[in-house]
Every structure is written in structure tokens, then in C-alpha cells.
Image (cartoon, rainbow, N blue to C red; front, side):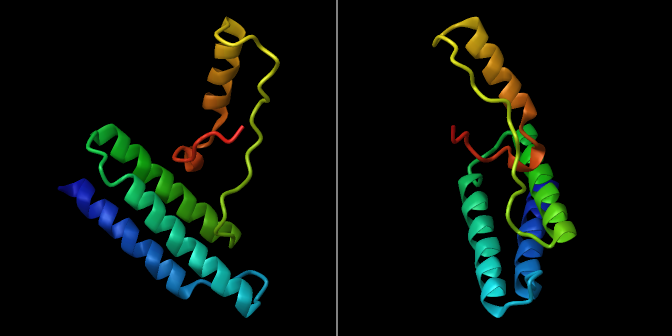
Length: 120
């Protein structure tokens, strides 16, 4: 029951932040665009994770959400910060080298981007 309350509290907090958000540039168009991004991103990720029942996974998602909120407020930028992952080399598929490279990429991903799938 405590996690449900915490998740709903975070959801409401994000919408309060979006309602009061001001873009760092001060431009009205930029502010509207960033507010829309915050709301859309919150809805998308909360909807994506709504079926999670594992308590450990829920705690991980809560920590990711808190980290993204803190980073966004600190840097006055709602978008995720770019990350620099080690590149995948030209390893043969199903080889030990490829598995090692994938493991390093997984470990290098910061907590605030755990819900995003790999693009490359």
C-alpha cells in the first residue's frame, strides 16, 4: 500500500512541476513545448510500467523517477541527459566478446534512463 501512495504522489508531483514549469530560455513557445514533453513523458512511462507487480522493480522505477525529477529541476531541462556508452565493436554474434560488451553497456547506463530501450 505504501508504494502505491508513493507512486501516485510522484505522478501528482510531476504534473504540478509541469504546470509551473518555465523554460530556461524564457520563450513562451519553448515553455509550452517543454510542459507538453513533461506531461507526455510522465503519462507514457507510468502507463508502460502500470502492470509491474514485482516490488524490487517498482522501487527501481520510483528511484528512476525521483532521479529524473531532481536532474530536471536542477538543470532546468526536462529532457534526459545524454549518456555515452561504450560502443559495440565488431564482435561475432553469440561470442563471449559480444556478451562482455553488452554487459558493459548495461552497467554503464545511469539509473535515470533504465526504462529506455537501447537504440543502437
